[in-house]
Structures are given as C-alpha cells and as structure tokens.
Length: 211
Image (cartoon, rainbow, N blue to C red; front, side, top):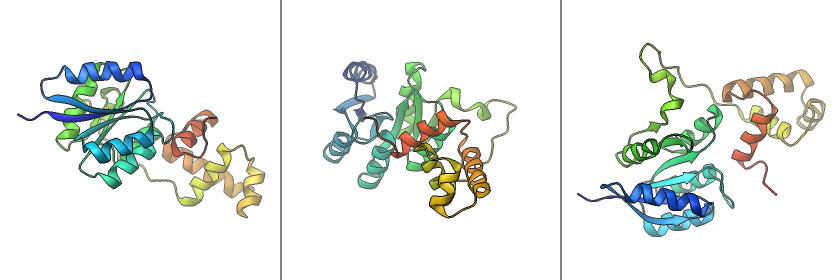
C-alpha cells in the first residue's frame, strides 16, 4: 500500500522535527518535505505535490490562511490540514472556507493530527474533537452562519486598524449608527467577542502584519 505523502509547513524547526517523527512513525504516512514560511510552502507544494499539507496558521511571509488559498489554487489535489493553537470559531470558519479539510489544535493529542491527515487524504473533513460539540450525542448540528458582507468586513478592517466609529463613518460616508450595526453584524457572524478577537482575526486576514 502506498504511503500518504505529507508536507510539513511550520516555522519552528523543533516543532517540525516533532511532527516529522510523529508522521514517519505511522505505517501509512511519509513526510516528503518541510517548509518554514508561507512562500516556501507554496514552492514545496508545487515541486513535491504532496497528498496532504499540514499547515501552521501563524507563519511568516504568508500566513496559513493565505498559504491555504494558494495551495488550493495551484495544487487542488493537495489537501490541507490546518494546525494551530487558536480554537476561535472565526479561525475555523476562515480556514474551512479557504479550502482546508482538517483543523487540528496543537494542544490536542497527537492522534488528532494523525486522524486528520488520514481523513484529508481520503477527501474527508476532520475537525479537532474539542471543536465539534454539535457532533456529540443529543446535540443538533447548527446551520452554517452567514458570511460578513463586503461593507461589514471593511468596517471590521478599519476597526482593527484603530479607527473610531466616527472616523469609519466619515471614511465610508456612513452614519455612526450604521457603522455600529455593521460592526455588530460582522462580529456576530464571525463569533468575535471583543477587540482582541478582532485584532487576531485581522492578523489572520493579513490586514495587519507583525513587525
């Protein structure tokens, strides 16, 4: 039986080494390459054509969301498993919308990642077990939430950059009340609960860049 070819995209070498040991220890998997940033990830995917790319969300050059979009565009046969410490609902939604098949938390057991890689290689979606309470017995699955509109996203972007409601209203030619409504709607749809969540979401989107 041929092994699942896996690419590891993670900017911390020590973490990559641990992931390689975990993956190569599986009888049905093999690490075929590594990358330490988003741009290197896209190059590695283009040359190696792995079946599964395990992608850290927080990487330099291009973050995991941007890298996932690039992988799905240039190598649609490569499945993406997002690996992160962020359990935020907004992060999960964005990565899945970008085309990731798996979403696993770094703080979870190693078996979660192994199962996610196998599922992704088979074309199945896999979410970390701590993220799917709706799948437990007696819990009905919630319908997917609506996506923020373009205007709502723009209001959220300006908010993340430090603009006040009054400044956003002037910049977009809206009333302050309309800005407040757009902001509330966007945060509700994305599951954001405060400014800290908004800033983290902005980093994920590439609206802000780490210095």
